[in-house]
Image 1 (cartoon, helix red, strand yellow):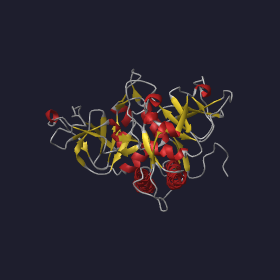
Image 2 (cartoon, one colour; image 1 turned 45 degrees about the vertical axis):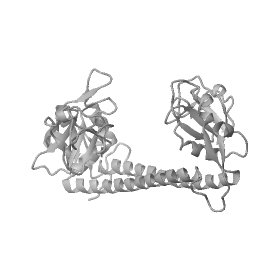
Image 3 (cartoon, helix red, strand yellow; image 1 turned 90 degrees about the vertical axis):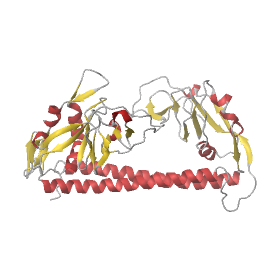
Image 4 (cartoon, helix red, strand yellow; image 1 turned 30 degrees about the horizontal axis):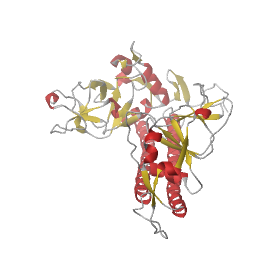
Length: 406
């Protein structure tokens, strides 16, 4: 048993940390023959798609956390077709050399050739020496590991607080741990398997979401009826189903949140950010409740005590026990709430929207079907989160040599 701070047998201390005895260290410059950049070109309006060709320029968002996202492109303006150069090639890494402080240094591994997708001047693509035996996918995983993401980003410089730039010298001088190519390939294969599992789970989640969306469109409009139900639905205004109140008495004044505090605080917006405050409990709204943000028309179903941060959040509750609030919430997800140029949308407009509405028994039956679908989605999302956490653990162990595959 080794004492804390001691190096266990078979390992050594190096400039890149503790690594196995049979690993070396190398600078990126020892493997790279160069970094190829594209050129800045004009693009056509994405909505018009007016150019009669299929030549695209990559957005800087085409690389993120090791992934190459081929859908993040813009069509090149016809007048600039002759200027494009450097298309995305297979078995390379594309790096964001110039970007905001948060996004500079993001990279993605390119699995296949994309001969009609070209790099802008803010992206680099790796070109390795002919005699290099490096496993490029292993390097991609290394560069997106927690430690090396920090190292790459810290190589960026610039006086602007909004834009940073990485020089070729700074990037190529990065020192790497160096397992033998066979072990690099084994590490890359193991992490690729983990990625494949995550991708399969994400595809299943997307399919389940599509199925739920289709079920909502049919069940919540009465196009499809569950067995045992056949009566006509009534047409109701949302204001007949839901009462509202302003969040005034639930608002917090503090903007400082900390996970150690025990009172949840919801901030309005498309994502409804959850923070915590240590302000006095005061009063909480009767639960459950639908939060409706007038300024974005985003909604959130909440069934836990909370405080509110924004006065734009309308709190919507069932008018009576005959209204299934969760069903109304799901129904609202199928409505396109039109934004206008004035405020107080719920009072002036949205509460007047008419919807077909079933009796309490059919409400409960539909809500049960949709709740079961939500439960399946939640289970898959939890499984995906666990798979991501396992992959992160694998990266930490395999890319540092703590766990050996060969």
